[in-house]
Amino acid sequence: MEPTTFVLFGATGDLAKRKIYPALYNLFLDGKLPPSFALIGLGRRELSDETFRGNVERSIRTFSRRKVQDDAAAVERFLDAFRYCVLDVGRKDDYRKLLDMIESREQELRLTPNRLFYLSVGPEFFEPIAANIQESGLGSADGWKRLVIEKPFGRDLPSARDLNRKLNQAFAEHEIFRIDHYLGKPMVQKLEALPRSHPAFQALWTGRRIASVQITAAETVGVEERAGYYDHSGAIRDMFQNHMLQLLMMLAAHLPAGQADEKAGVRKKKAVQALRPLTKEEAKAHVVRGQYAAGTVQGTPVVGYTAEPGIDAESANDTFIAARLLLDDPFWRGVPFYIRTGKRMSGKSTRIVVEFERLPGQPLPTAEDEGAAHDLLVVDIGPEEGITLRSKANDPRRSAASEPIRIDLQANPDDVPEAYENLIGDALRGDATFFAHWDEVEWSWAWVQPILEAFADNLVPLRLYAAGSEGPAESDALLAENGHRWWSDSRNEQEIEMKEGNQYAYHANH
Ligand SMILES: NC(=O)C1=CN([C@@H]2O[C@H](COP(=O)(O)OP(=O)(O)OC[C@H]3O[C@@H](n4cnc5c(N)ncnc54)[C@H](OP(=O)(O)O)[C@@H]3O)[C@@H](O)[C@H]2O)C=CC1
Ligand SMILES: O=C1O[C@H](COP(=O)(O)O)[C@@H](O)[C@H](O)[C@H]1O
Image 1 (cartoon, rainbow, N blue to C red):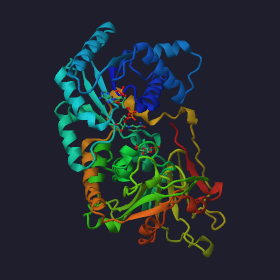
Image 2 (tube, rainbow, N blue to C red):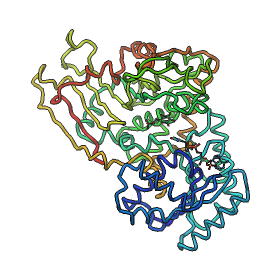
Image 3 (cartoon, rainbow, N blue to C red):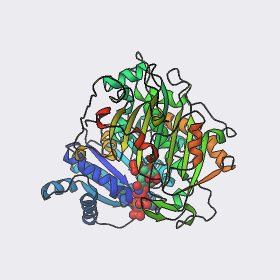
Image 4 (cartoon, rainbow, N blue to C red):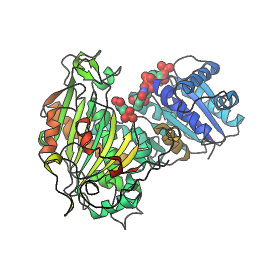
């Protein structure tokens, strides 16, 4: 890997502490940091290098997935790369000081001037930092430069386009790495190749009609301490436009054989472009907007959203969204994609369920089975990981069908890299596969824009749901209109949970 100077804006912030330093430490332990590596942390706070390194050490001791053992020498070698520089985003002199510091580190360590600028700061700083990097000469050295940028990328279509145009004045598209941490999750990285990953999945994918695809990201937490941000974003901007649509793209990027060598990014773009647009008038028929009311989450009583600290008592912000989407694509035509995400739901789970239509000859559901699943491919993305095939046809209680096959390749969970480890490792290597490319971001915002407008004009009613539930009843009704039901919530879990010998479970081998 090429020598790199990692320039971290927001080095004193929460994300750096909880995610970035632990990820870098784990990459270091795995030998995945460049052998010649320097990190310069930036923030307004006055910190000495020593205090900064002490903070980083505390962060890796608290948050690293691998225990920081007594190998003091390894920790010291890791921390040796870290320096700190005071920088206020708006002060031009600070960028000149930073340039001096970077150049002197590059000389000291004989580093080729490859510079990775990581913006772990509020979105209002993305554009001024990029402009100052260019203006100060920080980005004009004789090596590569990359910009790693956190979410949110805009708050609607026009602002995202504006931000992108401004970033492009300093960085080319191939130099911009937009983080969507869901794309760093190991199971998400397998989605696009899922149909080819096992003969059983391949046979299903090519031989069976898909009845529906359901994508759920349910959380038990509420707004936490993020009222200022969340009350102006809601579930639609916080989760739906980015993480949920990226999950859809990753899954739908499957194309018939023959085009399989097309790059994943191109196929993802085709998937998002194929989304049938909704007008703001149509939004009400396809989208459910919810907000949590008081309730009980896993045994603990909690207040409703508008009683949360920092939230306007009259707030009509969405903490839940469910939507039905259709793709005008030869493979997916007629298959509804149902997406939902919400806070203060009954459990924490991100899961995709692909439901296959019943085969001719497959046992008809009995009265006891009423509403039970046909064949389901269940992809658990987090917190549990795994792929399970649940099939009625192979239930030995009903038919003399084939012996159950169990494929269990579960890796030691301690060995599963964190999303940020995967993404930072990729950015250091210059591999943008699992980052959100501009086309994807722009098309996602374009699909979401009429819904944002419908919410703003109150064309989609706000439905209250009790904290600890599965969301508003209208979200169930949305699927029932097509004869479907959510297969990924605790009410139905027992119905799809069949006897051990009746499941094909494939746990990712990382
Ligand atoms: N925290 C999280 O879990 C997640 C965060 N994100 C995104 O990551 C980014 C950072 O979030 P987070 O770490 O939580 O935010 P914090 O508020 O914890 O940290 C903000 C950082 O920005 C620095 N900063 C603020 N103002 C200035 C300024 N004028 N000049 C220079 N530095 C400044 C602060 O340093 P100082 O005070 O020393 O100046 C601090 O290091 C945001 O874009 C957020 O949306 C994305 C996903 C999850
Ligand atoms: O980006 C975000 O994601 C988290 C959920 O992430 P997960 O990895 O725990 O599923 C969400 O809580 C947060 O509101 C959002 O900003």
